[in-house]
Each structure stands twice: as structure tokens, then as C-alpha cells.
Image 1 (tube, rainbow, N blue to C red):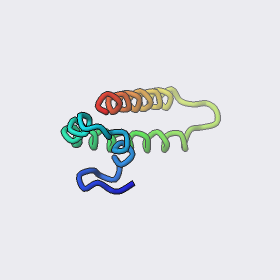
Image 2 (cartoon, one colour):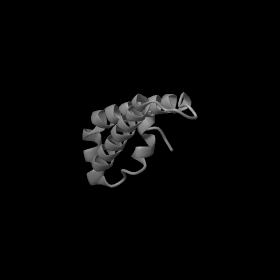
Image 3 (cartoon, helix red, strand yellow):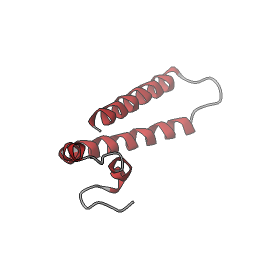
Image 4 (cartoon, rainbow, N blue to C red):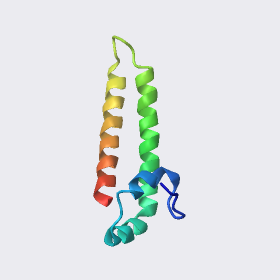
Length: 86
């Protein structure tokens, strides 16, 4: 896909979903919010990956379980926000 001048690289996959004229205008207006949400989503997914790498095979502490649930919930919320915008 050809890189758009007004879209950061992380949003190129989203660009392919936004092709009709009405949505293009809405998408252009929401670009800063989408960029912030995708940046936050990438950060949270990195945190979750790090947490899962140090996840013990047994005797998991309750704090780790709570942290994992919080990260998964926030990731789901951000994905839902992105879906509503697009």
C-alpha cells in the first residue's frame, strides 16, 4: 500500500478500511485521536507481553492476575474505541 502523507505508518492498515468520501473526512478529523489510541494500544500490548513472559508456571501471585486482567480490559476498551471511530 502506498504511504499517505498525512497518516503515520502505524495507521496504514486502518487507511485501507476508510475508502468512501464520507468516512475519509471523519477519519481525517479523528487522526490525532486514532494516533494516540493506537500508540497507547501498542504500549499496553507490550506491557502485557512482558508480563506474560515472566508469568510463572505455577503459584501465580494475585497481583499478577489482577494486573493481567486490568491490561486485558484496557486493551479491549481501546480496541472498541478505535472500532467506533472507524
